[in-house]
Every structure is written in structure tokens, then in C-alpha cells.
Length: 172
Image 1 (cartoon, rainbow, N blue to C red):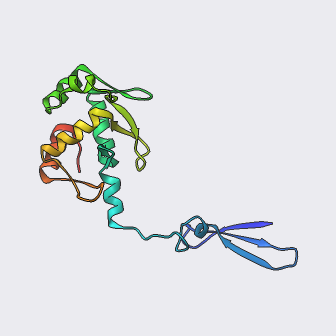
Image 2: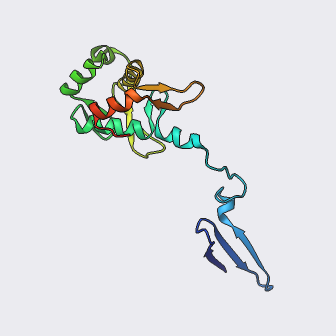
Image 3: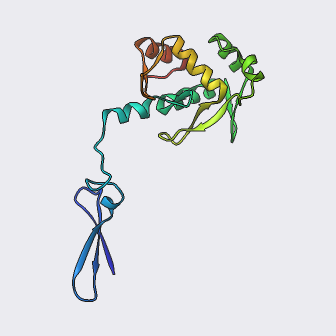
């Protein structure tokens, strides 16, 4: 029979097996699954927060910032969320054109325009497709975002913090 008990730090679950011979053996399942300080343990790294906050996903923005930006676009009526994609509204088309993104050229291309891309860290979709890629490129050209060399991490510039707040009501 197995008796389960929580360890002192509530992260490690230990199972004790009582054998027919009166002996007992303990197995720390937390360590077997890579939690705790056993095999597979990796201490938190400052980069972990950065990559979860803002990163590239192929050629578009992802992470907390990517999801917040996407849902700001939805709440403003620029995008409409469907089960599998985003639809660009007329108002959204004007807004994207205002950022220097030529939506008609994107529509003429072979790539899907506004794809729902599930974000691994947020477990919510962010904007992918040719529109997501063009938006990311445009925000970089405007100097609001800066990709880090040799990494998927994206930094928000001081100018970007102000612009994201003013244009999309995203407080960082």
C-alpha cells in the first residue's frame, strides 16, 4: 500500500511503500519528475522571466507582451477572434495601415493573414501570420521593441513603454 504525504516545502510529494516483509522504501516523485533538487533540476534564471515576457515566435511577437498586445487589438475592435483565427476589421485595417503595414499586400500573399498562435507561456493565443510578423517588424522599426542578438528575447525600449501605454493602454 502507498501512503502519500507532502514534504515541508509542499513541492515534493513522497510516497512510502510498506512491503510485505515490514520494510519500507521512499520514492520522491517530485525529484523523479524534475521538481525539487533532483535530476533535471535547473535553478531559475533571470532570462526565464525575459523570455516569458516578450520573445519572438518564428517572426512575430509572443509572450506576455504579445498576448496583451493581441487582446488590446481585439478589445479596440481592430481584430475579431474566431475559434481558429483572427479576422481583421475595417477599423483594424485603417489602424494597421497607419502603422505603415500594407494590409492589401499581405492579403495578396500566400501566407495566412491573422493566425491564432497559442502562446506556450501564457496558454492564450497571440497574433501570428503575415499580419503578426508585419506588426512585430513595424514596432521594431519604430524603435518600440528591440530583439536581443542571439536570442528570442525581445526588449521594450523606453520609447516603446510610452507608446504601448499611449496607443494600446498596455502598462509595463
